[in-house]
Image 1 (tube, helix red, strand yellow):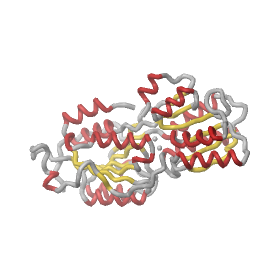
Image 2 (tube, helix red, strand yellow):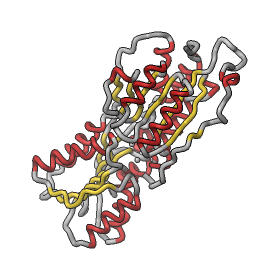
Image 3 (spheres, helix red, strand yellow):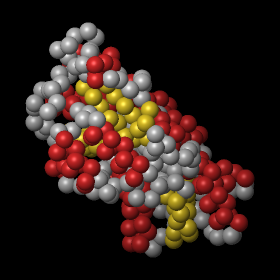
Image 4 (cartoon, one colour):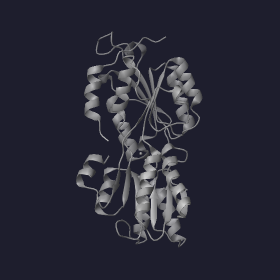
Length: 347
């Protein structure tokens, strides 16, 4: 049995207040190795906390997607690293991969190391039951962040997530409200099987089927701008008609626009092609403000303050009033977005 850890309340409260602000791809390969803010500590090191042996570090294993995947993921990783420091009472290690099996291996290693908390942003929604059961048996509390998984909620302590279905529904409702004469859509998907891809694809697919919209092509670019550019270029070369780009993240929307520009096809407000992205990178919102894009859906990368609050409550033995916390998120229209929106919500 592990000794009960005590939470560094003062540091946590300060950080929670400072960090409460409001998902990705640049096409990096997955990285299955572990990295951390510092070298791996020994048990003797872990037993110290600013010289006060009554306050041992809370040990945390954090499993995330590749931080080079997108601007969203970079911001998400930076947010977590700023929160889970030794100054704030944590001994944290980080592992990254875009592959589920590599994430599962990392999780099993953290469980064997008897971390206090396992924080998980899963690459895929399926395949986590055995890991969660092993963690529960070992007394390791699991907190999901950023993405949901297909598992009974009794197997994890809490979940802080975006409502990816709602993100997609907001974007599709906006697109429907544009009352275009026709809907001929290039649908560029993210990594297949991820919560973000499922939610954003599902909304478009169901509405297209209901209203008879034409999906000209539907392909995954795996959050990658260059792959998205190639998909759009292929459609242009085939001489197929299209008037909407529905890209499931900002980087893929950017790649799509590069292909449009090379072909001298106009895009944005009152132009030939409607451009939709997701994540609200600041540069993407600036494109929206200029009228080069039409809509961008927010995906909030700043989850550490929510996680810190949950750990605080669990360390004090409190019962969580909510097991699943859905973060509030917005959608932005090029015709109504303001400079304040860009500065406040751009990541």
